[in-house]
Image (cartoon, rainbow, N blue to C red; front, side):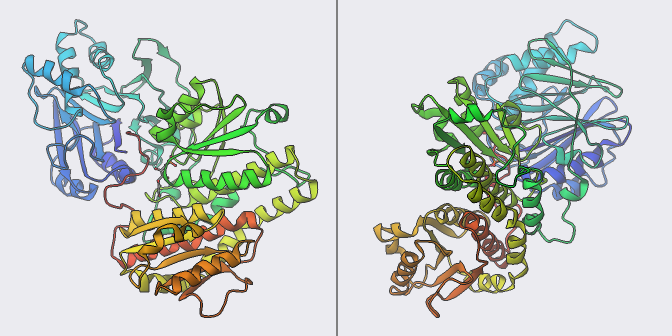
Length: 615
Ligand code: F6R
């Protein structure tokens, strides 16, 4: 949430900042702004709305400085106005700051600063930090290069809450400072230049070498060098990592939206998630980073999965797959609930978290809470070097490339696939036979081709979407592992089409939701061929008897009665472990095409932002 880009180097800063902001816009799009250091002044331009508004506002201004900071905002404190947009200047005009996070004690600090003569022109918590840094700068006795960094350090010591910041000082033409606690920040090491950014998408066009800052670290960037220390004054040896994402992966190419691009990338993404992860004998999966021996796995009696949003739906699928194929009990918790619930966990429980970004604050807090209680933790994440990836005791990278669309798509199917591979691995450590292992492994290897087939044969889904785009309510229903996919279908539709939708286990419908059924509330049934298929057909009949329209997603050769559903989407016949992935593709396409039909901004749905780094 919120994107930060900073630049120091030989080039004009503003075009580089604007390009970086465009690439980070999925992190927030309420307003955008930048400050450029030039002629001993901090020139600031900020505007509500998208980065394009800022580009127009900057156009025609002579911003030639080679040092600058910028921000794209997802509003937390203060409404969406030009005044609340970042950067924020201290009232003496000396300090400019961009901030991602929440300063919890901002009211007390503000009261103190007002008494010291500082004034405020926004409702944000971030402006408080700009003035607090200025206050410490004024009081700092050091008069050399350390003065600025010391004033930032002292200010941050008083902050309760989370921050990723980039800071400029009018009197320091050669210094760009950054710091983080709880909100991500990376340093990009370019050719004669440095960048600061919330994530790698902003720097990838200029460098692939990055340093991931850790909590409570401060980085001081000068034109020719940089140094990192902690808020407590310890020096830090930077570890430079190489980003393996390419520039093409963060660009739209021929697609109108990132969501469409990412839906259609799924065959390749799933292939990449599996690559090199099957054992030579073909009967099990192999994971390099779990950091647990088979003997240690045998001691695990229970798994707890925690995540948020779509990743939480992936956890629910993991529960079905692991309980079924590995016969290990699994519980699933919302990370935001687990962190405060103080749930009693059994001794031999292992805690798994799933997070595409690896930065979701509640998931990170759940991980830390589990570790604090002494539980071993593993993570499935997509972003290499993310905080969750670094802090978990072990984990699995998804390798699906950057996910830019705010609505998660390819990350979700990859999380399911990896959960199925974990189920295979754990099953083979327990009671799954060699033959069953080979059967499941072979089925999983075939998933990219089946997904590709659904995508190639999707033309009629677009047509179905057109006919259903006018409804304002919809139900998604499915049994067993189709229940989480029903939840996911409803979430996708809600978040990008703004259509009220709910997901239910199909049998639960009769316990309440059936009251919603009328010709104004269609239902999407996820009904692949399983042992409950005929029960689902009965549920469809119950809806039809009440004038509800039905879209059925069903297996190719399932005996689906002609004319029972109003519309039918066909899934290829497949091993049951693959049903959750296969059934996801039509619901993704349905919500995507409905949103397009309604003329909505699919990649930037209202009120949302990718990677929720505030509570
Ligand atoms: C919905 C969506 C969100 C995320 C959730 C967790 O389409 O994208 O619900 O799944 O915010 O994000 P990560 O996986 O980054 O922890």
